[in-house]
Amino acid sequence: MRRYVHKGTLSGQRRWLLIGVASSVLMVGCATLTKDVRVAATGPVHAPAERAADSVSGVRPASFTVAATGDFLLHDVLIRQGAQDASGSRTHDFLPMLKALKPVISKADLAICHIETPIAAEGSAYTGYPVFNSPPQIVDAVERLGYDTCSTASNHTLDKGAAGVRRTLAALDEAGIEHAGSARSAAEARRTTMLDVKGVRVAQLSYTYGTNGVAEPAGKEWLVNDGLDADVILADARRAKEAGADVVILSAHWGVEYQHEPSAQQRRLAERLLASPDVDLIIGDHAHVVQPFERFGDKWVLYGLGNQVANPTANAEATHEGMVGQFTFRYDEEARAWRASPAFIPTLVVPGPPIRLVNLAAALKGSDALSADLEGESASAAMRARYAEAATRTARVARSLGADVPVGK
Picture (cartoon, rainbow, N blue to C red):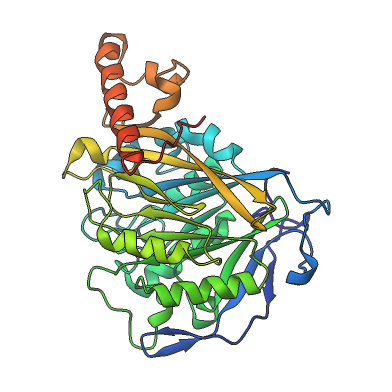
């Protein structure tokens, strides 16, 4: 089996396994929350002391792979494209727009997406910027692409209030996709999502810098992980490790929009978090353009994945460019910890019509079937020039802090 995350037991039912943890507390506004750990798994739960070489087979795997992508941000034009691509009983279908990444996403042992916006009720008014309310069919596309889990803490999480949070998480649950960053109850907020990846326990944490000035309702400060407080994040990461996590991956919604350079705050926070033994990798969203990789010691941060799919008017060319962050984890015997080796695949949203996401690494090698059909043979030379421009810019930004990160496959 490729992954042990959301397919559940043989009966097809998802199973939550809760592990009691130390009685550290998380302060969120005026609420005090004690973290539990939510584990999506098919195998038994082991205490940390029993897990030195734990896996389904009892032998530590040689490696496992993670793929992470940027913002799903459905502006109005993308919602209309989803409607145009629908057939049969579907009112919207976003897979045709996104399917170029399916080979990359589906082959990863753990695939992480970022659901930036609330999911709407079926048949309700779907809206883009500035107050998003996205069609639920985007979650269906996420599942069909092969994602295992999504971060949900963003500045738009509360665009539709508590009801939007409930709908979003219910849609992900229905699709069998795990999630971290927002919650429907205080009890759910007290849990950390942990995923069984080839027998390796990977905890997912997700936080946002803010919520566009929309405050959580009184008594519901747990709706979203709002704030990038290093002490809070490190406390959560420590609890995850104490509960048996081998690897902790942090999704951070941060940075300055439309800026390729990470801010001083991003770099300071990344350095502090990665200095801890409890945080193993940081992946960033929100800037809507790609930002670089940086290495601190033997750990990595990818400051910004760019958009997976969006159509903002600001900085239009760069906001159509994104990347898939790829990380191969291997166990470092000396450090007694899992360490990642990074790579990236540049992507491009072609504005069409039709609007399509392109895997640039494949397209520039002539192996992306979508690229031949987007605008016809007469435009192929101009299209390939745009591909090359986007891929070159993404590579330059990805390596701009001195990390010689390769292009992946």
